[in-house]
Image 1 (cartoon, helix red, strand yellow):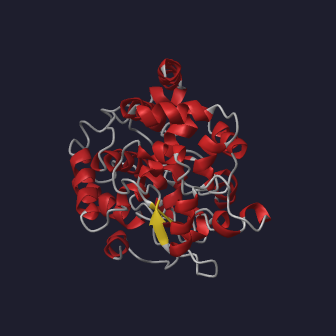
Image 2: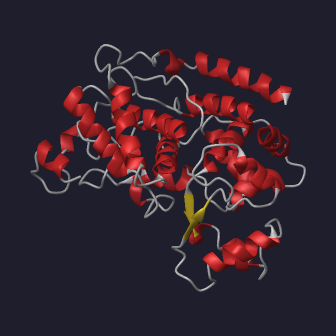
Length: 344
């Protein structure tokens, strides 16, 4: 347990030393948009009253942004004549949620602080607010990101980890982003809330790795429960909680579920069930010490949010998160900003 604390300090120092981090600051908007955080908090809080999944969805949206050409808001861009949207990549299509809430936040922020706050920063703040509203940790958010002028659907297909990944595949996907094994186990803990479609794990229930049998690492009682939710010849669209213990709360129960072989996704259960894996000790530590998990989550979220950020004169501050400013009419060819905003 102590070794993880030491690692956390080392990783924090690494974040501070990163060149991009030096250009970001928690006080970046203190003069230009002092009420930014309350605006973001209000919109997400109001959305959470009718959608308890929104917090998990916003953290996932931030994750899926940062793993593709960095934390630059590229995941928010719609298809246009010049943009091939990441939203249609295989890991994203029909599964990204919260885009409407991000647009609501952007509209409210533009009304208060026009052409000032990037969509990339809005995603970063939204992820922190989502954690707080779920009962999870808070942290100071380094701000000052700029928005990309491009999207990269091919890179989204390549870089985003799949729910059927083995531990080695997960480690490789995170290493590409400069994130290590502790970051992997820590950030996976965001699955402490939210839901998943049957299609993301049904192979574990009936024909794991083409064996004709279920995944042997899956608790047998839990297996029967999941088979009731996800029939073998069903559509695959039924939803179930990622955390069967406290499904709407941000806590450390995700890790105790793994210890009981009740991780929903293969990629999650791999953290504990891969023989002799170095991730097992981290799972055990986080399961027994929620404060340790929260502290590492703070560090890893800041580290992730600093991946390949655009700063200074790079990119732009988008006026509407779904379109670059030069193509803000989208596919329609002539809608004004106000018309676009009114359609969301």
